[in-house]
Length: 439
Image (cartoon, rainbow, N blue to C red; front, side, top):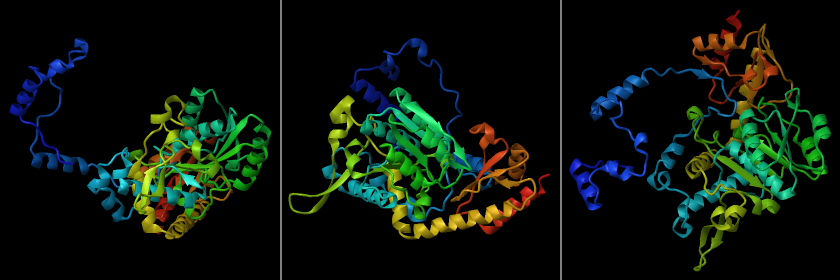
């Protein structure tokens, strides 16, 4: 998008046209005490050459480190074609298609995204994407209330802590009770789940693989939920795992698609996804693109089931969400188009490299792999002093992982670490070597 500045002469002409002497007159409705009386304290203007040199000097301060941090935001290789396609102006500048009949390209890309999500999750229908994984999970919790007319949500303590906070925020505004289910050996304690679930339970929320990287027993949890006439909501934060793991016989599947061709970028942006069984289709939030036939018999795409949405049903809408993360969802669509069935091989590589790291770390003195539950590409390491480990590794240009005490006080001196396909054998060997040298 080009930036074309206005000249002082042009500014005066525009002000004269609307009958205003000065631009400050446009802000007369604002309290005078709130209006800035002096110029902003910013550096003087620079030429393009000076700006380039300034940015280059700032860039030289960056340090390249090997990161073993995951915890909801993952470093995966991104094929160059992903950014090439999403940088095209017809995609890059587009917004939610409010006139779908003239936005066939955008609608087709969203339809293909929905198709990918349905194939990966095993669900019947998916929406056009959500803002992120956490808000998608919160919407799913509220959706389960709308479906069952029950007011109790059971959520495992192994769900991402920040996701849980968003769920609790949403539910508080709707007077829904949220109860956390404890974990055992890194996975949801199914006995405690059985004791807590009752006739008022709308849904059971599980993350798989969970926050500790452990794989949940979805079959047993699904049986407990459905025998109680409650819904099962499965949340998938590390989307690459779908190359190996099924989402289970869930009623609603949500997750975050950052792993599908989107850089960690200090935490965002990414996109959330949401899919459900066909019988729950009209309770889904957000937009849904459908395929149809036009008057000439040609295939076309439309925004369908809009009667659920806010611009029609107002306060009775299924959700306040009335847009989607189309550009980020497109990145995910391009990424999945490129990988195809190779997603399974990518997931296997992630798992193999992670198990190699676990095997090496488990042999170290003063370090212990805590949970014996099966894992995907994250694992928890117990050490004598997590802060010292993090500091010493950083001195060697290694980002250790997440100190779990922040979210789980009972897991003091425990680190959550992640390995992906971007880590080479030498990266893992260096990590282990440095860890071994720390006394």
